[in-house]
Length: 294
Image: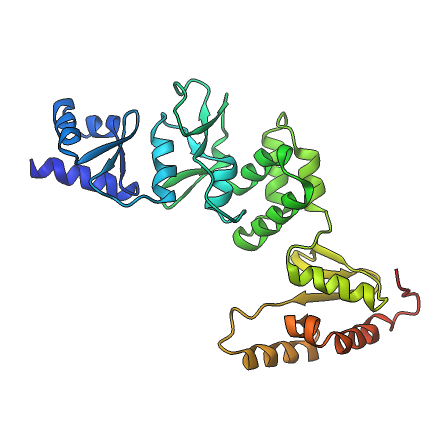
């Protein structure tokens, strides 16, 4: 009996406390033993043929793992659920959403299902042992129903969090030429959009100061940059406080970088010292004689 518990524990540990009946059968645990564990409350049904082991606490990872286990091999967490899992969107976790092979079985309550004839191996990955669609595939799946501004923000998060740039996304679109949304996704990759409240306030400050507006959140020389004026070859980063121990250290570091070739402004520069920031930018931008306010 102890050996069976050990098998159960090992499988559950890898899968956030969730197991599939077929996995236990394949490991040599008989159907009658599984049924006894269910009656005893050691296994609690989550979906048909999928169980929570013991009194494992609920979690988003466990919910998404259980949704994958509810179907056969080749199933991955996808769409909004995968975007949440990989940090491309914020907010409350969406309900489990999976992409499954066309013949993967019947629908399951509480799971959003997308059936495909074939999901390329290069479009699959894993996050903490949970099979999941890759970042480029998530963006392509969500592109048709996602507003351009939101899609642009997701592309930015993909770059920052996962180093996923245009080349990887283009390769995914080439593997899936019949999927809709490619045109919008390319537009999002090249779109100028503000992605934070600080960026919104910075653009508003530029307008109020009569300065030319930059391109925002674009790919420049292999990097994703916040603000770029192509004609003046000026790049500005709007940096945040979170990675510095104190505000004094943070402001000092930004001031040091601004004295070098790296131009950076903080919340304080934009909101509290806007006039000085405009004066500094006017000096930097007006060195080109053809620069004119937009």
